[in-house]
Length: 307
Image 1 (cartoon, rainbow, N blue to C red):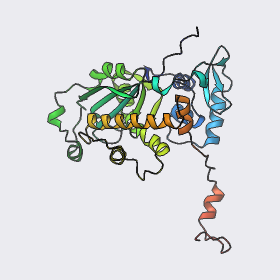
Image 2 (tube, rainbow, N blue to C red):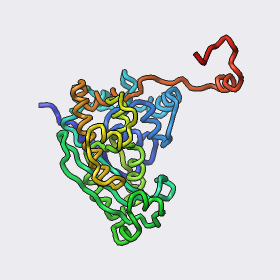
Image 3 (cartoon, rainbow, N blue to C red):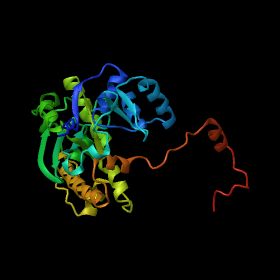
Image 4 (tube, rainbow, N blue to C red):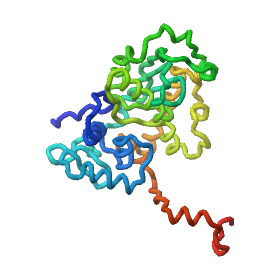
C-alpha cells in the first residue's frame, strides 16, 4: 500500500522568518511556476520571467529541500527526490478536492491600507456539489463609507455589535484548512482574508488558490466578459443577493461546479491538469529602454502599422 499523500489545501501557519521558509510554506501545497512563486515569496504584484528565474536560482538553487522540475516549476524535495505530490499520477483529482469559495464585503479596496472586512462567506464545495454555506457579518472596527453602504446595504448599525474578525478567525481557519481557496477575482479576497488573519492571529494564509475569472477565460473563451454577473447569466444561475457575501459566494460556487464539469469533459481531471490549463500560454519579452525610446519617435513609413 502506498503512503498517503500529504494534506492538500489552504493552511494557516506562523509567519515564516526567511524568504526560503516562505517559499517552503508556499510549495507545501504543491509545485508552482517560478513567476508565481517569486511574486508570492517577495510579495510583489509582477515580475519578469527572467528576473524571477534568477531570483529563484539565487534563493533556492543551492538548498536540497527545493527542486526545479523539467517543466520549470519549483517543488519541495523529499529525501533528495521530488515529493510524491508532484507526480502527475499522484496529483489530487478534481473530484476529490475540497474547495472553499470565499467572498468578502469590505470598507474599501486597500487590504493593507486600513480597509477591513464587513462580511465574509465561505461556501464548501465537495465532489462537484455545494456542501455547506457559512456567512457572518463582521465588525470592521472603523466607519463604513456611505458609498459602500449604498453598494452592499451593510451599515454601521448592522455591524457595530458583531464580532471582530479576530474573534471569528478560528472558525475561518477551520473552514479554509485543507481546501483550495476559490474566489471571483481571488487576489482581492485572498489579500483581505490573509491580512485579517495576520492582524488577528499573527499567522499567514498559504496554499493553493483558484480564480474563477481566470478559469472562465480559459474554459469559456467566447464569453465576452467574465464578471460575476455575466458568468452567472451565462450559466442561468440566480444571484440571490448581489454584493452580499453569501449571495456572491454561493453564485460563484455554483459557477465553479459548472466549470469543473466542463474541465473534466475537456480532459482536465487533476489539479496538475488545471494548473497546466491556467499557466500563461506565452511569455512576454521584457520591454527594454531601447524599445521605449523607439516608441517615443514616429515610425518610418516603411513600417505599415495601420493596415
